[in-house]
Length: 466
Image 1 (cartoon, one colour):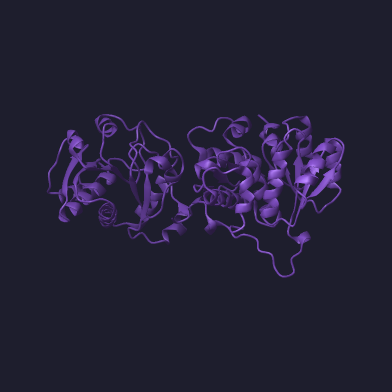
Image 2 (cartoon, rainbow, N blue to C red; image 1 turned 90 degrees about the vertical axis):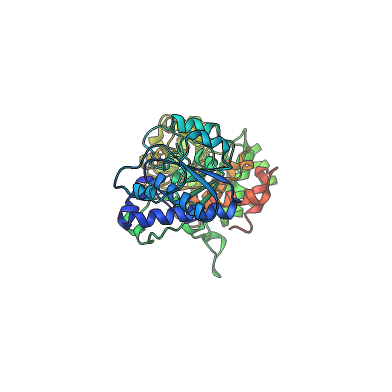
């Protein structure tokens, strides 16, 4: 998949820029027909055609499948607008027209009703027919009712076995629930030149290695120039800091310090993580003084296992005031509930949905816009965790991570992710790229491990990915 993602509005601009709508419609229909013929045996096909360009693509699919010997009929929701490209495609269809009741006799249904830019809820007889469909559904562009910009469902959307879209995928193909509704996703080339992207300048991307370059040590590298990550540990949940520290070490940080405000946690860390440094001080205030006394401790991870209390807030403020790079997670986020401006200047925030809501308010259906708005507000990168993790920078760039398997949803994996991001940041990666790389690497590591994954397994699986 190409890394650029186009919103429905951006895709419409690309179509207008390219011109020659009938040729693009023919190419789109041909791409869908080819994808069908590769994956399904000839059967009775019903094409559900809407009145717009999506329906026009459907008429082209019908004509090409019939020419290949398939049993094809079209059910039109409404006639295309006179003089439109879709009207021209409909005029070239000479085969049978059927009512929506024919959906019960179809062996395959092609949903060419509405594309990604649907401006209202999808309901009525066509939606009701799709609710009852038993045959596999193939969607043209997106399943009708799916918002291509947000992945949200407008009214109703029937799950597709296959979705064929054109030129570039859309955010709604990767954001949930859209990703699950699309089934297999094919992004087809329909002849639009890649130069159109220079005009559109998309700001949303599918996360992957094309977006970032990992730091590589050279022959003259040593531990002091490969980044120093300091992980602040809590008393009650010291294991969270251990997970983060181990991830930071595996991700290439030259030095990792576990900073502890009590003797019992310090002893645990010395025994459990012998390759890490342990900094011990009595109380949170003394611990911050000790951390800041060494200017080489320039990248901090605060939050895993920490309580969301006044001491944590004060620690964050001191670290930010000192100009150190900060990755804030867990307790450091909840400590600023309803006061996100207190985190201004942090390099990376890594909230899950509940933490995000406590900071910035309800996410709503548009995770992408909510994360962008949050990043602009705090002036740092926000990584909103989930199966469809969204990473946004304050300059408006955003990436959707879609390689995380479901078994990654287990306790402690967020601590690992935060440690991984902190290590990449400490080694000189810009914050947006470090957050994107961390999300992708963790997803890839989890996929390697497979079901039954524990958070403790992840750092070892980074070995072939860093």
